[in-house]
Image (cartoon, rainbow, N blue to C red; front, side, top):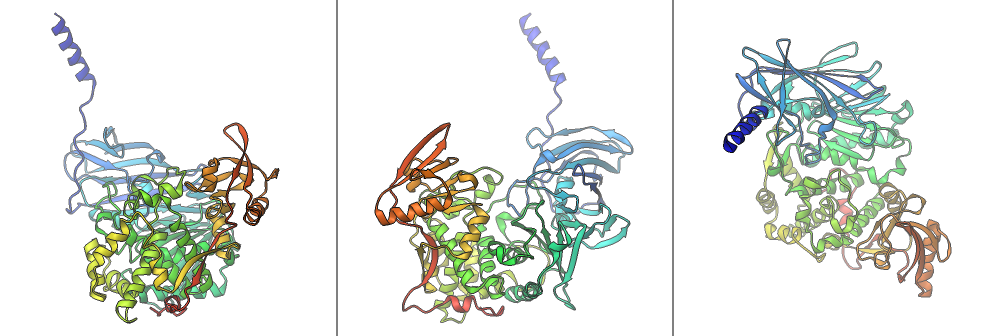
Amino acid sequence: MKNTFCALLLLIASAAVPAAPAALPAPRDLPFRGEMTLSVDATDQVHKILRVRQTIPVQRKGEMVLMYPQWETDSHSATQQLTGLAGLIVTAGGRRVEWLRDGGDPYAFHVDVPHGARELEVEFQFLSPTAGNVLMSPDMLTLPWQKVALYPAGWFIRNIGVRAELKLPAGFQYATSLQTAAVRDQLVSFKPTTFDDLVDAPVHAGRYFKRIDLAPGAARPIHLNMIGDNEAALAIPPAMLDKYRAMATALPALFRSQHYRHYDFLLTLSEILPSGGGREHQESSENNLALDFFTRPDAHLPMADLIVHEYAHSWNGRFRQPADLWSPTLNQPVRGSLLWVYEGQTEFWGRVLAARLGLRSRQQTLDALAVDAANAVSRAGRQWKSLQDSTNDALYMPGRQMQWRDWQRREDYYGEGVLLWLDVDMLLRERTGGRAGLADFAGAFFGANHALATSTYTFADVCKALNAIAPYAWSGYFTTRLRAHDDSHLLDGLARAGYRLVYTDEPTEYFVQNEDFNVGGMDLSTSLGLTVGKKGVVKTVAWEGPAFRAGVGIGAKLTQVGGLPYSDDALKQAIKAAAASGRPIALGFDADGRSQTVLIPYYGSLRYPRLERIPGKPDQLERLLAHSPSAT
């Protein structure tokens, strides 16, 4: 009787639980019949809601799986937030069709397509963030298409055709690398493209808009598109505009190709939308800048090379891409083992070309390199985490809080990549008697033709290309540096160039601006071993540094210095006094509900990074940073 009762319970339970969804279809490089349509209404600026309607052609009877993009190209990570998608309704022939979210992958939606249905109609909303990574304001809109579209699983997205349209708020103008088919009132219709190309072509729109042709009469047009919180933000100084016109010539010359049909710089100048970052695309780039970037250009030195960096990514990153970073869809995991090439060399060219174009002076560039070097030297985490392992950071760190930057390490392939590729450039010059440098690699490896399709490469390809310029044990060279747990080779490039890293008690102009941009306060990480934000709150503490060993923790609120009320200037004066007197620094603070005072035995005075010429060695940076864009 007991067995019969248990069997009955199992039968009831199995009837109540729906069958598990089938496995997700693997992407295949096959033709996709028909094309999707995608309509986005971006007129609800009050609530910052994007309303979406799609049609998706049915390819065969049975189940269809719709995917919401998860992996984003510019972050190299699964950074797309699913929480913004809401109100999903699927119909076919006017009748509602139920969907079932995949139990293992919440970005996948299983739909049982009704018999005879030719297409699915999809409706949902994307609830744009109202704080943080804001996409909309009363006067501005940035639209990444991957946030407002689903696509069918089972195909390479380069094979899925799509026809998109966007309804803009009244009075808005727009810019994108997509080709426009028609404009009717506020509705912009774009020419058919592939889903792959669509998500690589965001739209920027705004009430205050200016578009400038950077290459008049060029066969491949290049435009600067600026959108601001107000009209005054768009007043680019003529001298800076001339530098951007020179940039539009300099990078194609460096990479010896123009694989894009046209190129659009998409710039936001805003206090509302986030500033200080960029996103790369093959025929456009997104550059988010401060509202006064053009009206006070000398106040934004750390961001002076952002636009150059993102433009260079059109070659290094989009046209040529590391093989393990390429994916046939937006939901297949990728790896970043070559981010030291993808980001590191791009950052290197940003530093170099900013100097050549006059976006930063030669001295400001040397000061930027000094900060790169000081940051790299301070990475205590190298003891356990190599630069190669840091290329995995994109897989698990984006969007997550990190307390101990120097010990945990985070995306060090940017700044440390600058130093690595500087050494490669200097080594190429040494081995070729000055006849070749990294520019020869850049032109041969990232250029060479005008094709539009992405071409992938491997570590072996990088070494092979360098060997064609100057035979050397490049594989062992990179392996030694990428897996290092010490800094014995870290500054080789500076030394080959005739420079060394030193510290002085006065900061450079670049350091002060970088300090404000990254800390928003005071950076004493290379002296006392901490950074201090607003109102005396400790933002970071250097691992095993003087403040760390004395017992100062992150989040402590500094209250006293030497028994007197705390101020940033008072702490700096106390550091200088300790260096002169040999007496420890008394630092009072509140932390964890208690007030305490510690004595910090630091006597090294203030230390700010600079580069200094090595006596007797030729200045190899002089030619590299020459202001002629054609210099190599």
